[in-house]
Amino acid sequence: MNVQIVAVSTAESSQLTTKQDPSPPCRLKWVPTSTDHIVEAEKHLLSLVKTGYKTEQVDIGSGPSGSKIKWFRSSSNEPRYINTVTFDSSQDSPTIVLIHGYGASQGFFFRNFDTLASKFQVIAIDLLGWGGSSRPDFTCKSTEETEAWFIDSFEEWRKAKNLTNFILLGHSFGGYVASKYSLKHPEHVKHLILAGPAGFANESEHSSEQFAKFKSSWKGAVADHIWECNFTPQKLIRGLGPWGRNIVQKYTGNRFGSYSQGDPLTEEESKLLTEYFYHTLAAKASGELCLKYIFSLGAFARKPLLESASEWKVPTTFIYGVVDWMDYQGAELARKEMKVPCDIIRVPQAGHYVFIDNPSGFHEAVLYACHKYICPGSSEVPLFPQGLTAV
Image (cartoon, rainbow, N blue to C red; front, side, top):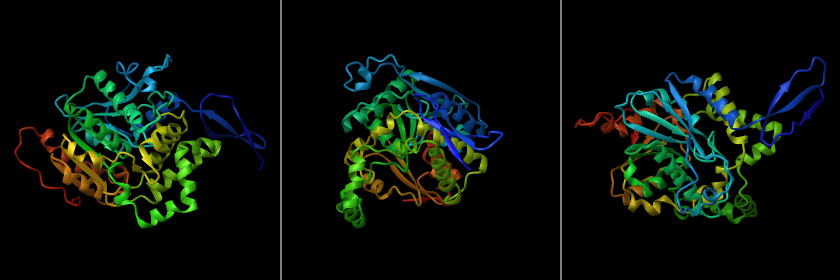
């Protein structure tokens, strides 16, 4: 069978669909992707959630006065907004804000929204330059500028939403952003929950001998060069053109299906997450370009959070999957320096995406961490959830 690629001119990225002609050969055709496609895929994914919700594009303006961050100074009229999903809940419930990890978007918490919304006012966002949020050109050239890109845009979002005294939950890279935000604006965060957070491990203390040998080899030198050129996974998906979606589908099916550490996705969940994941990856590059400025090869933070542990002002709960590739020992070292309450919880049958792999275990850990906000005034400390491990 002959296969012909038919390119449709578009300024956006693309996905692959197969069109059946009445006679051979069949054709493969580009279909554009855009923010509208992301939002539509998000809507389909959230159809799995029973709780009512509303979606809004929160205008974050042109940035704080006097900001040195280039996107704030841009003369472009392109709107700057944060894609925000708010779930129905009791007005008396404590507010929890969810921040996704690198390469993901807020929809990755789709298995958690119903349970969390029964206890919290749940708000989930796409960071600036990710998911359904606006994707301005990424012009940061340093770690400081890159951190401010996320911290300051989140603060503008918070002010636009008139929020304070909320629980902040970040996963992986979102945990890094949540931590940096809480260090700068602790007055607005009453509890910090970090799920498999990136950025705590110190390379000199946590890199293995095997990794050190790899870095010193020619292969390591090539890998480091590629990293420093800021070659992101998203660039690979775009570069593969019509085959990019197939790669995403295989990853989703394997990571959350065949090789799931806990509760595998159903066929419908996998299908909808794949579609959503693909569009968020293939759209215009923006926030993803933070990678080399925040981390060195091996995902070690250039400015490890461990170095700021003594400055921590917000009570914190770490949640890790038992087989999370993020090392919980970094959290242990940080806790020794912290002057605020700090718990570390490990969830069985879960890897890095603990909230997808074992949603019930993840929910128990979150509820345990937040019991005093859910039941204010209660002096009773709930029993530690069975099956979870306190470190």
